[in-house]
Image (cartoon, rainbow, N blue to C red; front, side, top):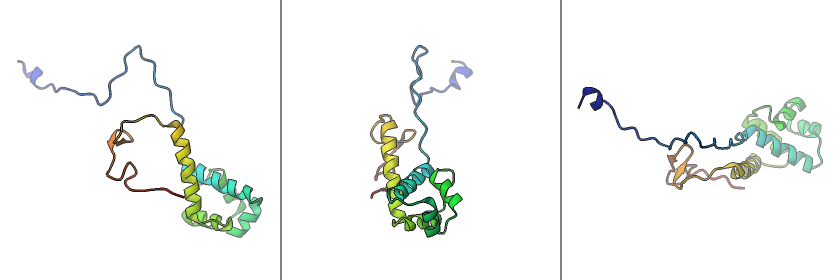
Length: 139
């Protein structure tokens, strides 16, 4: 046996490489952004109450321009801003986050690929409380 042969390690691929003739897997749509989901919830709740952006802006003491950008997912609002907007709509911050979480779950359920049980994300093992490590989003 040569020195070169003894320095070579066996490589075990984590995922089998696709055969040259195999077509590429279909691309998944991008993950939804949290700011888009939260903005969608705020806008939907405001419209469901028949309220204007100006009305909610005044009640929450958030500028109309900034609130509009939050609703459109253009701005990443702080928890204080989100809580003020939620209060102006008669909701709690927890309500807004739970509604956004429900929307995230529904969107990702339609785009998720089957995974082997007991793993999350890039094949990492799930913790004892599941893939979120014990975090539960509930309404």
